[in-house]
Length: 244
Length: 317
Image (cartoon, rainbow over all chains, first blue to last red; front, side, top):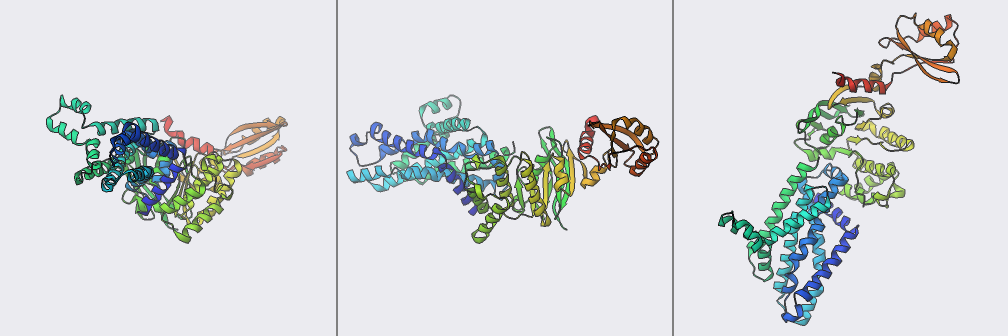
């Protein structure tokens, strides 16, 4: 536990020692604000909720989260520091979790910094803060799911740009798997069971349910299990690839 | 003396290529073992397996009683390791890096403080302690790498080319440090610099194409040189022919080689057969034939010569 914590702390410091952290947070906040007010029509809707805020999160995460995750392992392998890290008394799982938690905490910091919008909506009306809280939890979990994919892909390559592009594409597929473009690609050849299975993997479907305040444990379990599966795969890939 | 590190039949294959082939040796406390071999011989691969970074295809390494294939974490606790090229987190400071390593190694409180202070003092890192590692000179980076390796006062120290790329002063410092620490530790140093073996090691293991080809003290290795016990005579160039015909009368001389000429003085190397001692006989010939020599001394044998000989033997087969 202390080992994982030590790795997380180092990783988190590494984010803030480069401009990446500040660029990410500023861009995220600016885009989150812009999408809420312009595309989401926060004022025009005339409703005291944050639906217009949360509904754009998947799209922001689609290209911002892979940027957070891309360096996690690719950089270690490129610079050779993976040999330093993995010859310390650290298990692969501890290293994977430590890095993942650092990145996840980092996105949580960005998410918490959107609090002015919560103050705004409370000032303007009386929203259901339970639903807003659920929205934040859902958004946080989805960021984690995207990150686990990003961390996994980052372990596959030593090139950060490739890690970014592949992670973004993979996240896009997961996000869209409930929608027509992906569904029709499967419908031609796969059995209806498979098509339904793919549809049920959609991030959007599960995320929408959470942000609407529909509390279904399955949505939370879904996102958490995506995280677990990809982190497990991540650990296997790190073990296989670290020497090459 | 107790065995700290035991390597048993360590083998690693990459696809069809056998990088390390059935290498075995052990290192005791107090020993500094020079692990030699040409580039690509499998030195680094062996070290990566011992330190638990790569898993062996077969065989294992036992470090202070723990088997690296069964309990790699325990093995990693016993070992301090400087990977090849001393990779470090360049955006951290030595302070941050050593703090991180101390945390991961479970050091806390006053132990942590004194471990870091001790490593910083030993490697003289004070002046760069709070400077970003990426901006440091190669010498300082290597020293930061060494500092993290010795931080927890490990029983076994494995250093992959610790002096590579350092200037002569820095090499001297690092070698002194290794000498200081060797009393109660087992130290393995990989290198392709033979002067290093002379300078710090009390034993040498040579590998070539993944297999062990020699194991002994540096003196043992020197004895294998055809120049071992040869006699070097410096004399005026016009007397060289006289010397040649004189020493050819000696029983155990296999030949005479001419070295460089400096200020009309030639270095002549009289090479013995099978390392026999011929210095007295050579001296006698010089006196009997009245040949004035400016210098005369016995060669110890040339490590680089032995190295070339034993690491290229397989190529000829």
